[in-house]
Image (tube, rainbow, N blue to C red; front, side, top):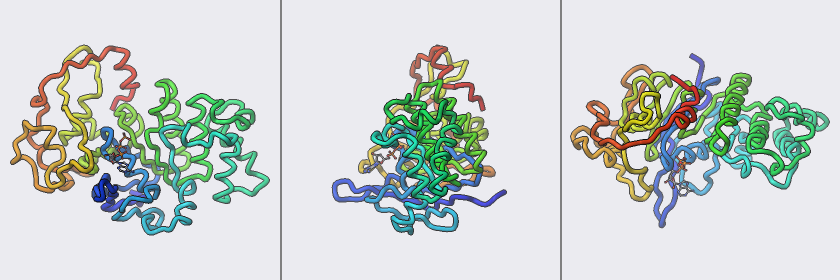
Length: 348
Ligand SMILES: Nc1ncnc2c1ncn2[C@@H]1O[C@H](COP(=O)(O)OP(=O)(O)OP(=O)(O)O)[C@@H](O)[C@H]1O
């Protein structure tokens, strides 16, 4: 086993709401090895993006604790100058919406040249040709011509390819992709995911892939961390997680992934949403309010992640006798087209 590239220890990121700090990322520990894709999944508001932004040092107003160890340094202790060197250098991010990630007033080629300049990756006279080479590498046809375009002149898929070209320009050891395909058409999504996978293997990079799409997880991830209300509730290798999910929240997420035998049938769906940061009970199992049919005695006080099989960790004891039957049946109308779109061939 190779050494970890990224080691996050007890990371807590708290935001100020009404004069008080509330953690959106709460005591999160995770690690990523070179050439490994760790997917971070969970519903909207579970803290996935807050985790990613914390790793990149982009939450400047939040109160942060813990350690983000990357290439021998704790990133939480680096000053802004050093973080500027790391961001876009050894650690790069692919954002959800390429339109907001790119500068609308700058030609595509120039945006790549800028990042090469900041990180001093290539001598001045080679930057332009390398920028075109990168556009070509990420699958942009007629890269010379596209290099002269502004972001608004390109399609969403092409824009995301440009964002990826910028992200890989300095051959990062760590890539953080925050919902990289959410803003794209389904057909383009698969191409972009393939490209990320290909580049990651080429660069031997570790990837933190943030998504709420379990089809994407099945296709891309080596391991999966499931996040709920700021905490990791389950971590496992991808096959193990899909075949042998344990935490009620993971089961609930997986149950919402359409499978062939579900077409036109009823599903057990857990109701509710992730609670707001300032409305959360932080002493018990955070998922307890959404599974009220599970008796309080099945939950732990202040539950911790525990290893139940090699590499498979679960939080709280409520998973032990858990059944989704208690959620009642909800008719979910899944037609064949939706099924195909949702699974995208990503069988685990
Ligand atoms: N800058 C901020 N200030 C205050 N609260 C914040 C801030 N950023 C995020 N939050 C809160 O932190 C929680 C986690 O948000 P986050 O965006 O990380 O969730 P997410 O899992 O990435 O969701 P999504 O999939 O919708 O992006 C939410 O309750 C959100 O409202």
